[in-house]
Every structure is written in C-alpha cells, then in structure tokens.
Image (cartoon, rainbow, N blue to C red; front, side, top):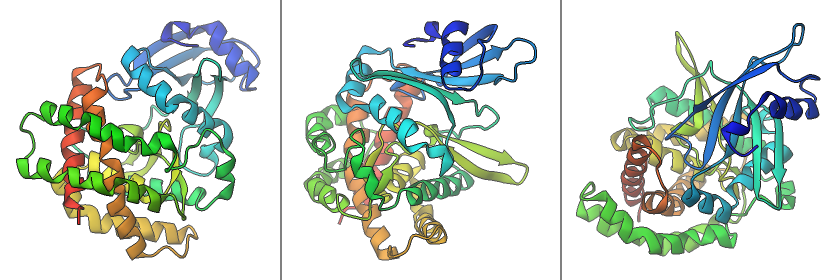
Length: 353
C-alpha cells in the first residue's frame, strides 16, 4: 500500500486478516485524506469500513502511508524516518506502556524502504492548534505523556540492539550540525524580518555548543526520544472538566537520547514564546515529579535543568533546516514552518549561556 488509492477492501482485508484482527474482508471501504498540512512527511487517511453481517470489525481505522512529495521523500529516505516509525510499532509496541495509537497491522519493505501502518481510529479525541500554541492544560497533558513515554524505556539497555533506532551521536544525527551550517542563511532570508536582529545574531552561538551537547546526551540516562513532540503530533482527551490526557503520534524521528530533548522540543515549537517563558518552571517541575512517581530515581532538578538547556541547543537545526528545505505542501504547512522557526530560534537564544 503506497497511496490512498491503494486502500481498497481487498488490501485492507488482507492486512487485517494477516494480523488476526478479522477473518474476512470488509464489504466496502471509504477513504478520506486527513492531516493535510499537519504531517509533512507522510500521508494519512481515515478508512470507514463496512463488514458482512455478524462480523465484529472496526468501523473506522487510520492508515499512515509514505509521503508522495518527491522533495520530502528524499528527506524521509536520507534519515530513515519511515524505518524508525515501523520499528517503534513493530518492536516496542508502545501502546502497551504509554499513551499511543494501537497498531492493528503493518507492512515494511526493507529493500524499498517503504511501509504502511493501520492504526486504531482516535477520532473521538481532538488536536490542539499548533499555530496558536498549546494551552496550559494541553501543555501539562503533554508533559505527563512524555514523562510516561520516557519512563517506559529509561536506561533500557536492550534499546542498543535495535538497529533502526539511532543513538543521538549517530553520524546522521550529528550531521544536523552541518545541515544548520548549510541552511542557516536560507532560513534567515525566509524569516524576512520576523525576528529581531539581536536574536538572529545570537543564534549561531548555539551551533558552537552542538557537538558537545550531543556528547553529553550520548551518555546515560537515555531512553527512546520521540524526536518530533509537537502539538500536531498529539491528540487530547477532553471532558467538561478540561483536558484529561494526551496521546502521542508519529514516531518517525525516534532516537535513543535523553528525554529532556522532547521537553525542549515541545516547549520551543508548540508554545507561544510568552507562554513558554511563563510556564517553563512549572513544566520542569511537573516532568520531574512525574518521572519520580513512575519510579525513576537518581535524576535531579539540576540534571533536568541542564539537559533542558542542552535540548534547545540540539534542537536548533531542526526548525532552521525545516523552514529552509521542507516543502510545506499547503498554506497551513508554510505558516507552521515559519512560526516553528521563529519560536525555536528564540527559545534557543533564551537558553544560551
């Protein structure tokens, strides 16, 4: 299954039967693209399913397929993004330890470097507004979800056996520093005066710390880092009393590193700058408290504060290079990339020194 047109009753039935979900094909499927301008490096479709009488099959599932954009396809191939996500769902089965979608079936072709996922439909949940920025409730729900995710694989040495999961000091990841060098001027041009000159002048200083920050993060404690923990990659359970939880999505950028990277990444890109500055102390306290509640010991507030600062240093090449080279596909995607760079660069400068 490569495109939305490949999602037929026969192909879906074959996949779900092979995975033991059902034992017959659906009689009819309807496919609707979802997430245009949200997931920039893949294609998402919601599949409505009708079944023969008496068959208790899912009424709706979500398919994640490879990107069809040639420019973004090169990025996915170069960094093995699809291979990483396939490994997360196949080998880690994350829904058994953390709050993620359940993978009902998947296929992966090593030779082609392509695959597909069929996930349970979480349509009853809702996303946040990445462009506006996370609310306080959404922020704390994400902090809880990330802490739970990190605690599940905290200092798990078996992660070293997963050849699809790169360490933070893998040449591909370390290469982000050079990518910053190659894309910085293009990023500055595309920002077109959206940031004060003082911030733009200060940002390259983070580049000088990049390799040393990577070296620190390559030492324990390490876990599975989500790598793309932004508001668009989460869904929220909401009730009359407010946001009660978050579900993490999209694991294409999974890496073995320190969990504080995800915290820095989320705060840098998914919070409006004033909200980030206001909430950071509470965010760090809540994350650490959650880790301790989950039995993670020996990791102090000063450890977290230092890792959080270094997380911003390591993150900087991502919003810079994304604005420079990722094809946004939609107007909404273009606005996201621009705002993400503004927020991410500002956050990094805030944490220099």
